[in-house]
Image 1 (cartoon, rainbow over the protein chains, first blue to last red):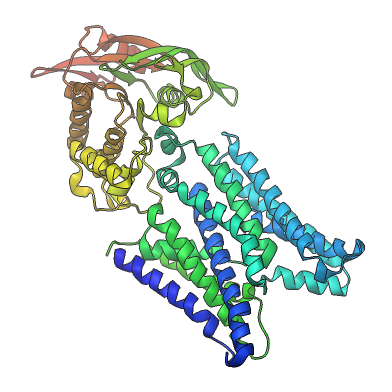
Image 2: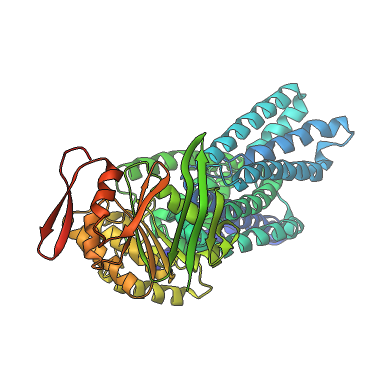
Length: 324
Length: 256
């Protein structure tokens, strides 16, 4: 297994290191400016966002004992999207241009993600709630938030609608180093807290009641993961919009590659998630000459068939990792 | 000496009484067998003892209410072997038993060493590198017992540990549990088959009979009145058959 871990780390590092150099020629001062001030911070943003979404997805799948649990299925992403769309529609009414409205969009996206996650965490912290109840509550909240979001888009004018659609497709913006510094504390808290819970999450794999008997405070663990997950995902969505499939698909890929032990799987989800989003963003930059695709389109285009393939592969009994 | 005490404990769910005014005490060093028909409330009693269910009355571990104890403190005194062990994800046996040592604040290296010692004690060290979802029923149960041993608690709760095992595996498992008891642990063990207690090998084992959420009798395994109690508990005639040194209680098929 050590070989596989090293290979995946090397692959991810190679993708991340190569990404800024791929694309239009970087000769001269302008090339150097593009590399240092646009592409490198953008790849670093992909590392932070990809790593966070994957780690949160892996933790959600553990606390819900469900391979379909992810920020997008427990409502975190939908809450953030709704918050951002409220900002997109409300900004012109408040006399704020959309170009200057980014802080407002970010703040409301974050609040939306946090409110939904707190609601789910409140349900989870009631000891009586079963895992599937919580997941169903998340799906219901996602559907409700999606319906309200559609209603908001319907009532928006053309400019607002374009901004809303562009935002909801998910993209890695040109935020520069200032943006990175702003998002970094959220990610640091998210990574630090979630990775510190590895032992409890590993014990939870034996079943909720068994973990309780072995000393894990399951309702508290679930609330902590949901709360901290909201912090990380809310920050990602606020800056980049809802980037689909990363939190769902990357943990599956890691599990197949290095096994289900959370001791390895959680840090490797960060590593592979970072590399995966950096690769997807590079594809999004390069695939259509002269313009960029939103990275969410690329992650969906790769993630959806990959997920179907993984499900079919696991269903046929070949998804179980064997040690090498 | 650690002890578990249930005093006038009642549990209700959806308007139905699952436990009614049950009192029971298990001290470290004692072996208590919990006997009763399906739906008697035996598993509910164990779950209440673990603090998994809200209950009226007192569930005390060394005098402390079990539901108010911090998880790690409770897990230092009480380990549980459920009827079915979940193996939703393919962890190795060593990883699973290592995870059972969550209550200890220790390095991963120390946790693995403790898990290996527990696997050795359970006679399951040869499975360490195998995946939990690839084990047979008997092997999986041995690994589950290793998880309990790894927790290093003075009290063990076992819920029908020999369920779904073949006769040879049942005997092997009861002998293993008996060994853990003789090493000084207290054991509260649910069983359907009172005759398996002969493999614990001590007439002083306490048998507690339960039906319809209540304790119906309590006596020593070697007591002559046990046959009548078991007959009344299961509402079936019981014949006493002497097989060598063992006394077997065999259902006769006639009403009690």
